[in-house]
Amino acid sequence: MTSSNEFSLRDLPLRPDLVGLEPYGAPQLHVPVQLNVNESAFDVPEPVVDAIVERIRPAARAANRYPDREFTELRERLANFVGHGVVPEQVWAANGSNEVLQHVLQAFGGPGRKLLSFSPTYSMYGLLAQGVGMEYVRVPRREDFTVDAELVSDAIEEHEPDIVILCGPNNPTGTGLGRDAVLAACASGAMVVVDEAYVEFSREYDATAIPLLESHPRLLISRTMSKAFAFAGVRLGYLIASPVVTNALRLVRLPYHLSALTQAAACAALEHAHLMLAQVDALRQQRDRLVVELRRRGFSPYPSDANFVLVGGIEHPEAVFDALLAEGIIVRNVGIESALRITAGTEAETTAVLEALQAIDRQ
Ligand SMILES: *Cc1c(COP(=O)(O)O)cnc(C)c1O
Image 1 (cartoon, rainbow, N blue to C red):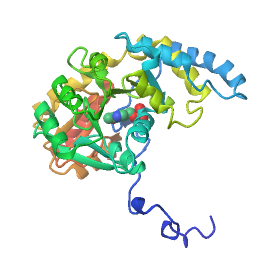
Image 2: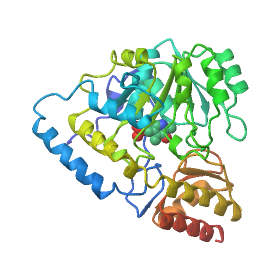
Image 3: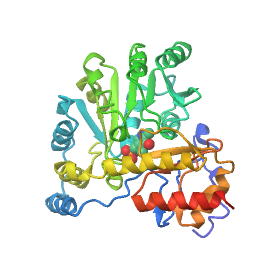
């Protein structure tokens, strides 16, 4: 590290299209109340911790060997967990749904092809498109952040994308996704990814697009264990699609991409799925409480089907972000004017952020 201050990235032959780009980077600050990256506020339940440790032991002993490249047991457990008659051949998984989405873009996107999504939406889509050298087109959502069939059809007709990603419920706005919009995308012949990272928090029962899979072979549904399943640290995302699609993803994944330890931990947690999901209702309640209480306090929270709330009506989001941080509370500035995004936490955490916001407001 001696001469590091004389040597900069400018001296390296970085790929031209990466010059000047910023890496993904939500701040990782260890403050008491972390409401910035939509994790679950609740620790992994102790019986599940025990089950994981028990499964990790034999996996560690056998770690001189490569893991099961086909993650057979994990795919079976995921298919069983998802239900809806999904079979293991329809399931794909990787180290977080970010990697799942990367596999999809590597297999079906790439140079000369186009990805379409509806903004504001998940910022990783653009970075993933960049990574595989494909064009990324963002069409604005409606004023209330919804996406409807007409908007989708018009955007597809205008831009002729190869892949469409619909994020539902949408990050960072919390907006639910209607089936009509998904069907409009499917009608186009493009590969359609529905990112259901937050679907377990939907207000509408069974908001998933999974029932549409049977009649739409180009539909892919992306899910994650990072949010409702409260397992962000393990890095496990998965996808449900036609077996033909999951087979194609084998062309681009790295060999043995899911470590034996990851597979063991995820299988153990899936055996106790009811415990892993036990706090979803509590988090939904806190999400709804945030909306009601913030509205009562004169803010403009958007309706949310996720485990966070986008709060508008904040004149100086940077200043409010800093003021909350000074109180030991971290939220997220997602770059939307007059708005901050707040993850629903425990009841005490929600109380803390509501009280802090009220105090700031009165300054
Ligand atoms: C958090 C999130 C993901 C999940 O990322 P992982 O890599 O599975 O942790 C995917 N999509 C959206 C929209 C998200 O907000």
